[in-house]
Image 1: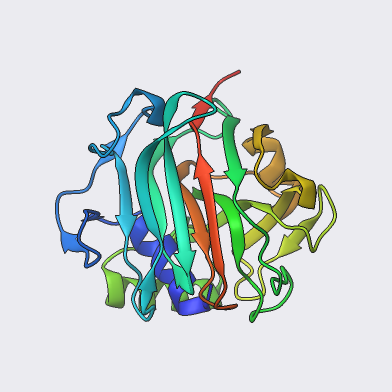
Image 2 (image 1 turned 90 degrees about the vertical axis):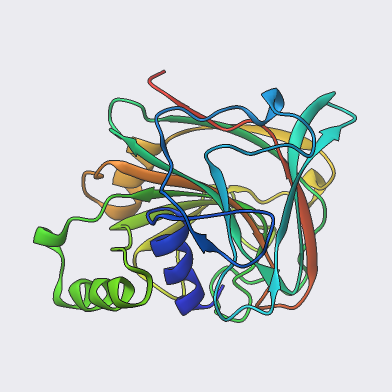
Amino acid sequence: MQKPILLSCLAVALTSGVAFGADPSPSPLAPVTVTALTPFSTKQVGGNLYGWQFQALRGVKNQTRYVLVKDEELGLPVVEASADGAAGGLGVRLDVEAKASPILRFKWRVGNLIESSDPRSKSGDDYSARIYVTFLSEPERASFRERTENALARTLYGETPPKAALAYVFSHKAKQGEIILSPFTSRVKKIVIDADPASVGKWKSFERNVYEDYKRAFGDEPTRISGIAIMVDTDNTGEKASARFGDVSLSSK
């Protein structure tokens, strides 16, 4: 994902009042902040994803598609994401104390490998599956560079981007458990939670302590959690990728 697009995603998709709809062009609606993540499995196939909002990203010709489908193996509704040289995220805006509710649980099924992906390069920074957790901005503690980036984001999108983000990713081009700095911004650290090519086509469940992961990745205390997003993107490599995402939850234990 290119840096302006990443900034757009972080600034708009997870912290702004731009809501998502079936139309790929975002329209300015009232912001929706939720205190709990409604399970995908409780929703109707083809129905409304209340709270979860799709962001069509500026500068990207093709947008990742997210639809509610019934998974035959699970027997439940899940979100299916597909990208063909595309990018875009499905996110929810939150306001949660990271230390009080640090346990993130989710599941995904990766559809295929992105052969030319490379988590350390800008040209290969695409993933068959990833989940972002963003953290509230701290303007009073921002560096000069961060203040400059924040000012640009406010001018373009009307919102201050998050202080930082963790991205839990599937990557067969990295080591399990590896923490990788985004090639586009120091605000994003990627944690490789699955590096096994044999995972393709299989449902995998994950549990992470976001509070501890943040401290390990960034070396300080996290601010409040401001959003979560699921994503499949192939805008850099131009390849095709797909994944299915099951329920996502954030809890105290």
